[in-house]
Amino acid sequence: MNRLYHFPLSPFCRKVRLTLAEKKLEVELVEERYWEPSADFLRRNPAGKVPVLKTDGRVMAESQAICEWLEETVPQPPLMPRDAEGRFEVRRICAWFDDKFHEEVTSKLLYERVNKKIMGQGYPDSRAVKFGASRIKYHLDYMAWLLDQRRWLAGDAMTLADFTAAAHLSCLDYISDVDWNRSANVKDWYAKIKSRPSFRPLLADQVPGFPAAAHYTDLDF
Image 1 (tube, helix red, strand yellow):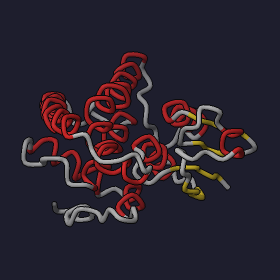
Image 2 (cartoon, helix red, strand yellow):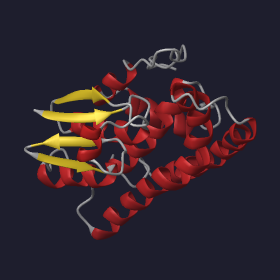
Image 3 (cartoon, rainbow, N blue to C red):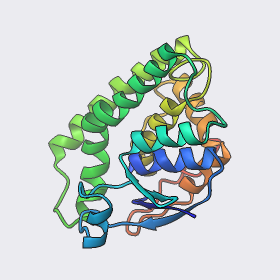
Image 4 (cartoon, rainbow, N blue to C red):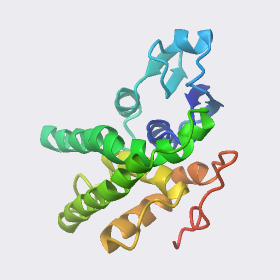
């Protein structure tokens, strides 16, 4: 049995969960308070971060590395193109969301509004929240520009790039921090991702003290 140490509103954990579900791999989810790491958890990942996947005697960390390992060991259905140029574009967009979007948006909205309270680190920094609310518009516009040219973010097929972006946006959608009216293309793209069977477990997530937005589970949002 695969076991994933995760936190429900971690975009990096959601990215791995989506990949596992799309590959139809069963997984036991173990919620980890990674900000209060136990000695056992630090033995699994000395970096003290989630996700951590335990499978077939292996213990693996870092979401992109885990997802690419899953792609190589369970090639169907494919989530990476077969050509080098296509794989480069997928990795570029994954990095865009895991690095730039995470730094400018996820950390400024989700972490300030939710994680700080859960971790007992005080109140949101209003300047950070304002910055994140401003920058998400730029990122949504960039996604709209990509989707004007392609069916999916990295090309004409759904890939890990789409799951990476959806993982970040779904966390923000949980707290109603995404303006889906800004771009019809982006909203339609997210609706396609959201309606996939692999996405259903994410829609069932609940974080105590932080109820999901009313539209969060609505497929016709």
